[in-house]
Length: 297
Ligand code: NCD
Picture 1: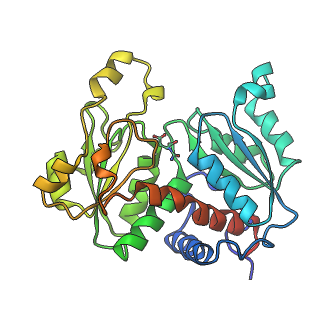
Picture 2: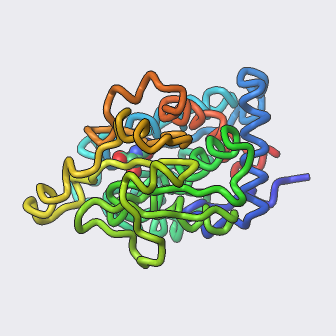
């Protein structure tokens, strides 16, 4: 049976039903159990990674995932090398790429760019981050990591910490967590509140004492138009070993990475530090996303 996700684009977590989220996580689990056992699945297909904004984990884990499934990979990691630099519109670039690939993974500094791309594309477009908008595949790997480490999501408490205003990983994660029965606590950096504002705001100490997961994020420097607002927000929230110890925290610590200074390095050697494992989970989760959207399942 062909996956119901075949041929669809993934712009937002709201594009997926709860069942489809679980289906992708289950497929990712199977991929993780046998990472080299699916090398024929996308043989003959081509995946394009079009990155108009910096990335390490997202682009390379998508490319690793595509290679592990046997697909060819084309793309760019520096928009200055593309015809956008000559004045080509995003829509024209996307239309051309559709003739070169079977699926397009795109990151772009403008909120809504992936939606615009999907509107003109005749292949699935995966939003790998659109400005301060969303980052749905990061959410899938975050959910996968939490489900695996906590044994489920229903009834758990997740504290989102840091730049809740501009952090696109948070914008995708929070609605997904709520749909899956998880309570969300918010610890915003100064002036960087969660849009919508309906999560309970707590201190970092309260979060460390109460939560099952501390989901820490970087202040998104590149989104600020006012440098003084960035200066006022940076460096104010820091998860360190002392915080976890004085609150007898049982939480796992996650971060989409890259980290700047919001998690102290003295946390790295604690068993509760899960951010590198979280990043590695990007490969099986993105293998699952590619396999479903291309229609190989
Ligand atoms: C995040 C992003 O690009 O939104 N990184 C990632 O994809 N793992 C988080 C960030 O850059 O702070």
